Length: 320
Image (cartoon, rainbow, N blue to C red; front, top):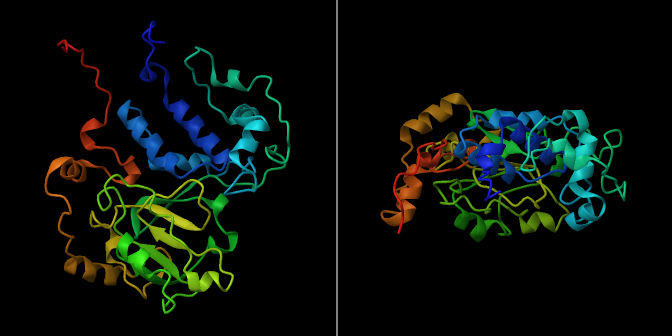
């Protein structure tokens, strides 16, 4: 590829990204795929938006691996891996060239499943429609993500009072308090962990179940935050809420005791908007300051704004 000067941007197309979305849905893949694919598309000038991830929402879950199933990724590989999944997806996959100058379907030719409980068929899926879903509401006007395959079905429709942690430090210090005023129905909210609030947007959104509830057998609760979380995490979690709290998104206005259907009343939000004051910047110099001032929100991939778009200008200077 180096000798032939074949670059990623010469091969990849919008259809390539759609295939990635479909495949991610079929394997029960990570929510991190959202920001990664959005930022890569942005860098090469391909039109991909958060709404495009809805294309995978009706794709059946074919791979019986954690956190959506019971096996490990090693078992997925031994059972035949991605070529088997691509073969099952068949006509749903879009025509897309690859670095071998062959259509993506070439990689699925002759694929064979060695363990049908690990990789299911389209007629025997683990779940019938389990791809990532994009949620919108007045808590997330620019969108948020949920992974139904890793959620508790009974919690996918839920309304309850919120308990709010204003920062990751607040959550770590208080979530295991015996007197935490939360029940199994409470919606836990975490703020301040998006691209600006926690620069780099690390996977700090793996919010545990409060210890006092774990003792009583609670294994899942609805959680809402502007952070990312590990692709191995289980739970009914609404994440990547955009705009984030630090950027003045509605999440910043949520208070403990609010009843959430993913929204509080518009009137209450308007009053709080007038009174809301952003936190002073945590960083006043260096790269962290540049990052916070230029990072985009999660619905755009959390890239730096000056890096979006394909630069086609020829290099005219030599480096020494």
